Image (cartoon, rainbow, N blue to C red; front, side):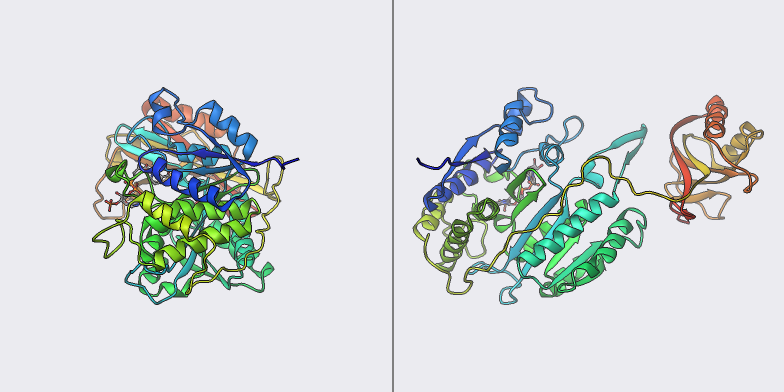
Amino acid sequence: MTPAKRKITVLPGDGIGPEVVDSALEIIQATGVAVEFEKCEAGARAFAKGIVTGIPKETIESIERTRVVLKGPLETPIGHGNRSANVTLRTLFETYGNIRPVRELPGVHTAFTGRQLDIVIVRENIEDLYAGIEYMQTPGVAESLKLISREGCEKIVKLAFAFAIAEGRKAVHCATKSNILKLTEGLLQHTFEELAPQYPSITSKHILIDNAAHQLAMRPEQFDVIVTTNMNGDILSDLTSGLTGGLGFAPSANIGNDVSIFEAVHGSAPDIAGKNKANPTALILSAAMMLRQISEGKAANDVEQAVLVTLESGIRTSDMLGSEQPTSTTDFTREVISNLGKTSKVSPPKKYTNVELPAARPGVNVVPAKSRKLTGVDIYIESDLEPNALASDLEGLTSSSPLTLQMITNRGAIVFPSMGRGVSLVDHYRCRFVLRDASSGLGESDILSLLGSIGVGHRWMHVEKLQEFDGEQAYSKSQV
Ligand code: NAP
């Protein structure tokens, strides 16, 4: 009996998506692996049919069956309204880790040619600002919540080290903005520094994200694996793709415990869509990562090697430097197929072992605190009053509360008590109330009655409790 073919969900996507996806599918088929493709819809066409997520039910069902996806780029409607279908897919199937490797490729000339770049960005993929929790707090002030969890940090750090070990890599850098965002970005740094000693064969180092960008432009060869938060990783991985030839060469894998999604880093490039001009390399290399994941390691190596041999032979796609007579997407594909089975002269196949994914923890993940204390509350108020006038109004309204006004900030700058410097103001104030008597206890009902008093004279839109966990302040100090 012929063994059943491994099913793969394929999302051709938008813009150049169908062209580069077709290229990868032809090449996969030419390797002879026993796979079967379930082509499904997602993105612009689904949005146009009124599917608000951009992901039809049939597509979700196919992914639940196959648990492996090869996808083209999906366009995100710009402006108000729909959420990105990409973000929805990543969140829905909890693909928490995005692995984005780049390396020097033969025949692809860049400012860094000869420096043997081989860098992998491991980007947290579902938390951070990309959770997309946003509010207009006033008609003129928008808010986005940057949520980072200990659970999310542990998973991405463990994935980065597991990936480094599987690929025989030497070093993992953790890149964050923890000097400014001490609690959110700092959580990734602290988790990294806590877990790194469990991987003694790998050198580990924390680096600030802005310095990482600078170092990547100056001395990129010092980096091996970089683990980072979602938005940092999005930006940094476009940068690293630029170091090695551009978006046309940058593959990626979105890794989850149940589902993995393989796609190019690039988007739908509408300017070149339908012109048979797109470079399919990024999607082909993403397909090779997918083949490796479904235990088709030989086919994965064959595809990678065929791409390298094709580039070595001097074939140029339109996005490459020195491409006066660029080859088309379809001709490039034919060339790769004809090179299957050949080995690159400069970059022979690497040895890979399976990535040991951190085990999924069922249920609600909790970081316990031995002690907790409620010490105050920040109340966000929309007001066109000057800070001193607002302060005296609030003090009047809350004179009988156990809480007293400690300070007011406007976009992070302290405006009450006055710091003696003029600040350009918007109608969005954070008003911090703390206990008049620090030795007394504070309860929820005190906060509710404070809100009631303030609500008599002002429009409040957001409340944050000020807490201490295990004696540590669980909120940021104000920026002056
Ligand atoms: P983009 O589609 O990546 O394109 C930026 C530019 O890069 C293109 O205009 C083109 O430059 C070049 N390029 C990208 N891929 C190429 C390839 N394979 N071959 C040759 N040149 C390539 O970025 P964007 O214009 O910012 O985004 C367009 C749409 O894609 C947006 O709707 C965005 O939301 C979506 N997007 C989707 C994903 C995803 O699905 N994962 C990722 C990113 C963006 P030239 O001008 O030189 O031709």
